Length: 181
Length: 245
Ligand SMILES: [Fe+2]
Image (cartoon, rainbow over all chains, first blue to last red; front, side, top):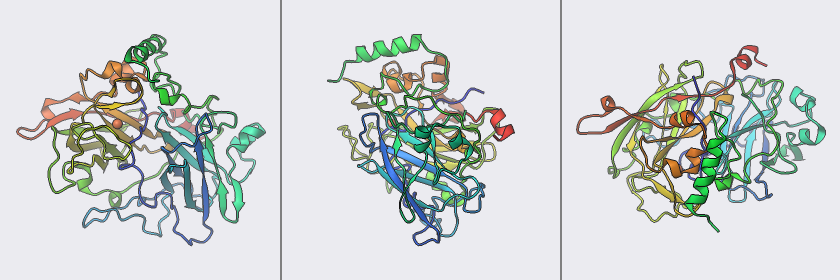
């Protein structure tokens, strides 16, 4: 069957898609928790204040089965209840703020050593996939890329447990985006 | 300086004449002006493996309440507008149902206004309509939303730019690589030809797949009009799935 075409997420997804603690894959104080954060930039180097990022990764043991509960609802009144603080769902979603900044808190993925990222934005007609690697592990995709391209996929350690990962949609230091078709 | 519609329409026609029949829009589609700085210049890279992207996030009953699929019952009063139901199935490229997965929708109210600070369209907000909903697909991949028909609204892509009425959809497949965000349109909308976002899908047949069908059997007497719209998720290709590369 022919697929349904993609269309831009547009500017007005704010009431629908981001959810409270969407970037907190693990709770504050979780043993081994890391923060990954950065900016999204357009082709003029300007921050993108209306991008939406989704993250999907293995748990610390390398399990990719995923678990429900990223956006739990209160079954009594239907209000937003959020994560239960125990279950690792493997999924996160954050919108960039007005400065184009985003942040998540998670644990390093086991076995499959990257955080898969899906980028949506006003102006972007079809989402883009990339990956956050926490180190240059020599993993297959990294090994296949020339050095300057490889560097766009490797988060920079800023201080203990904090990594910086910028996404450049277009331009000289353009992030490597993936063809998963 | 924003250009007039005829400049945009000429660009749309030129790109339509060169259509390669692709299912998805080119990320570089100049008539949609804000795509200019927001598409990569370099070709996408096929990774040697995609262990994570061939799997994907899962959602469950706890993530959704049964009321979330009814956008007309989220406030004390009833929203203004034409009550509709939108129903269909989420399928993969092989026609297999995508079960128990999350479908999210958002839309303007009947006057064409979003309750968003950046929406400056001087049309009334509706205190009884937020315009967001979600549900899980059933065992057949089916989804249903009850809502009101959204209004067309102006935007600033060019002079006198108007979006045809649409409902935004966000859909998950079984693989993260099947992720889809798109827009559903209503049949026969006179704004189709003028809209660079819909026309970014340059193949006519592909564009038709974004338009719901009015289905009289889905309409309910004295209550609502029914529309049917099936969603087919793209990729990853069968070889990827089989080889798990
Ligand atoms: Fe819209």
